[in-house]
Amino acid sequence: MKSIFYIILYFIGFSAAAQNKYETGMQKALALWQAEKPQEALQLFERIASVETTKWLPSFYASQILVFSGFNEKDKTAFTATMAKALTLLNISKTNSGGMSNAEIIVLEAQYYTAWVAFDGQTYGMQYAGKVADLYQKAAVIAANNPRVVLGRAEWDIGSAKFFGGDVSAYCNEVSRAIGLFETFIPESDLHPSGGQKHAIEVQQQNCGK
Image (cartoon, rainbow, N blue to C red; front, side, top):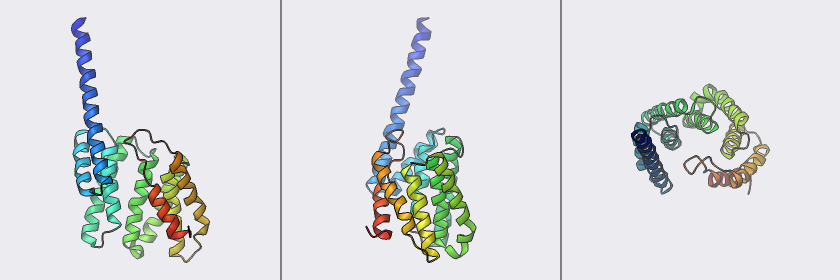
């Protein structure tokens, strides 16, 4: 019985050590990203994802870095390669999180298609606009008060209104609501998505006269 007890203790200790290593690595990667070192953060997230093959956060953040970088890419070859890698990582994250029930992943998928529209609206606007709107609707059903869901949807609506020459003021209340939700949002853990308020304030200042 003692041997069984010690074996159990060993595996508990091993599991705790592995979890601590995972958390330390993730915190380091997030710190690198916050320090405006996205490439270093990306490489570390990818290394963690290659080891922690059942967790969704490492591949999620790696994909998010690539999607965000896509908004600043002008070269089509580089953009296409970046987005292909982002999609691969996004699909891994989706699989590991249990499918389309994760609002954070759905928002990232919407941002992925938005990057294509931003890159070439004439080519990809009609192709992906409906998909982006549908994804934000799905995310809102799952997590109506998630500030990234509210902000992403409002920012997409503002962009669409601008494209068609419409009034954006109708969506400014949602931007304000998102800013307020960031104040009270409690992430599932220190590693889960929590950022976006600074960007929400920028969206408000640029589009809502505040």
